[in-house]
Length: 117
Image (cartoon, rainbow, N blue to C red; front, side, top):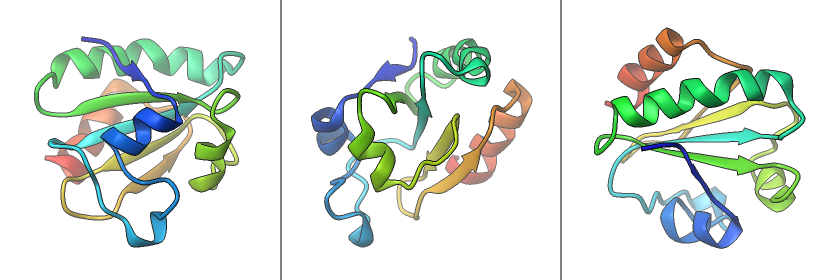
């Protein structure tokens, strides 16, 4: 399993209504990580294989999604993404937690255990 790329409509059906983030309602059936990235971003390129590893390691427990900020600027704006990579950790029943900057695999695992599981 690899991180899954989402467009605006897929985000709206799998994660949350991007038009109404003030009344956050997560639509997923398991916790999720959303990576806001760009194809030209060096730190994003370094993070990509780490996220794919995490997606494999947590398959069935955590969904891992990717959103290209150049292709989906409305989603990036909705979450006020100003630097990339920006990671959104989405637990099942709490508000998302935002982390900016690349993370090591051990940092990601710690964030998953702290915020998602």
